[in-house]
Length: 562
Ligand code: FAD
Image (cartoon, rainbow, N blue to C red; front, side):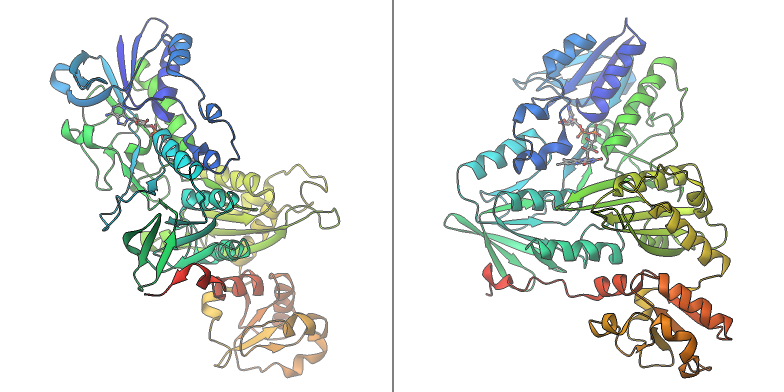
């Protein structure tokens, strides 16, 4: 049996190695148009920032080592240009530009994604880069090694954009980030992204939201980036991180079906519209297990797993179905860890799925053991059954294990009640006897059971002077250091003795710092005959983050108005 694989990194290299493990006799050809295979794309921002010091550490295998270990004919600088599916042959362009043909029995495409490069005036100027592969990385590294980078601009605040921001900041550069939407990390909901906004400002990153770069001009050794509001940022380096799209030209030119979202269409065995041609990784679109709709998912773990599954399907004949990825992702943003799984609230709204949400802030481990930090979890779930649709977590410590537990629960079709059943390994340095995931589960189940009606920070905004009583049950000192406009302060400890001050005819929206005292106040009020009481989800902490201004006070250092 002869297998040809197009693309030699995550999905392609995994599939080649797996095919060899299960079919010692197979002929396997791995085609890669660049110089390298099986390298760590996910490590590229860290090599640029110097965290990964040695370039060699990015390479998990060389073409030679991979070829000899797995007995694979690895052909780098060989690009697949056309498939003649009728004859089961593929046309390949070698490093000298000469085309030749290879026959295959089974073909796998794992060509990845290509960075989006908007057609802006001046975008080809020296010093403007995308970051996708080793070639891009070498170019950036060479550019920043040869000169002093005082100011850098990252355009696009997705996960990779923010990793790049951190790494450029680590080189000592002043870093601006320009993002078209009103928040960083579009996979998150605004309230969770706002925690990241504050952290970026704390790290003296110049965060510019709701602006686009409209053109570039060369300014001696520097680059002027012109924003949609007319401001000009003068920088030494620009990294474009405005997204990627599936690499489908080979598939499209060869007549393979492309789906509505622009990815190669595959069935649950990863077979394309043409028999014996398979595809995996960033280039495909696949049904989301929660919405049932196809979607694009640019993540390494799914690409690797798909590579393994597809190898089994190619060798044994479609035997294993893929259930789909829910998009579990994580990024380090300076000291913060930011993670997401499943569907965000805004995606649920778009998909027309009825949901409710909860926000909880817990200690990363027992408060009495030194070093505990705040960990925020947002859960999205069905308001009746409690089935979990998605979660986001932001914090300094232990974010990864919490998001992974919730991701597994979602993949198994679990509910918020299942989160309470997770048996967490607990000792004070690691967690609390009630782990943050369990607390998220308890709060969400209280919402479902009607024990704790909640109000969101958005609903709370601008309500204080209307027909609703905003009741702040924090201490006087906390209240004085910042509160929601129009709120009345009755500390929780005084609430029972001051019940006569609470109007009987108004809805009451209670809040405290993170939600716990608000819940206790809600219980006291409802037990005393107030039936229209809600607690602010995530408390004043969430409200104040989400309503804060995000502009860096010292922006004028880098910005000269036109
Ligand atoms: P790739 O790994 O991109 O491999 C595709 C290969 O196919 C490329 O080498 C390309 O040159 C080759 N190719 C394309 N067309 C042809 C052709 N016609 N002929 C021959 N060869 C061809 N994901 C995470 O989950 N976590 C992270 O932290 C993370 N960080 C990232 C950081 C960066 C800077 C980048 C760029 C990506 C990151 N990713 C991360 C995404 C992850 O790397 C991808 O999801 C994954 O590599 C996709 O695997 P793939 O096999 O589909 O494509």
